[in-house]
Length: 115
View 1 (tube, rainbow, N blue to C red):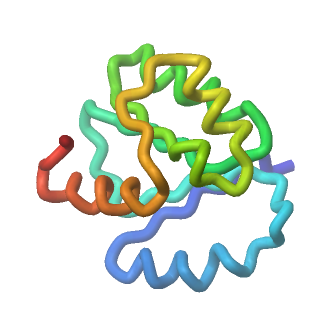
View 2 (view 1 turned 90 degrees about the horizontal axis):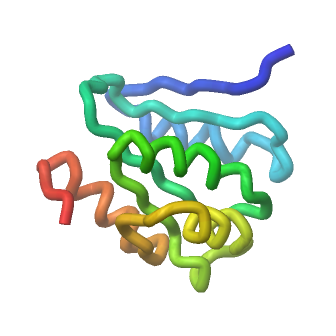
């Protein structure tokens, strides 16, 4: 039995994901990890978005305890606020941002800009 799906992509990956992900059912029950380029050295960032369970908080706590960066979607901008609120309650969050701001924030990371 498969427990988790990992999707790796590079050039053209965002376009491919834009086609692939909408094909999944709304209540898809497997975790999906998306890796766009796979160059990992030492610094990790965990991002929690809208969600109706608290499971994402556990993973974010592990990321934070390793000294890495945490980002959570502002619960006021979510479709389901349970996961973001659980993450905020579970550990210190570096950035709490509305969804659109998270996209802009992630876009700046490739230029080496964190703040």
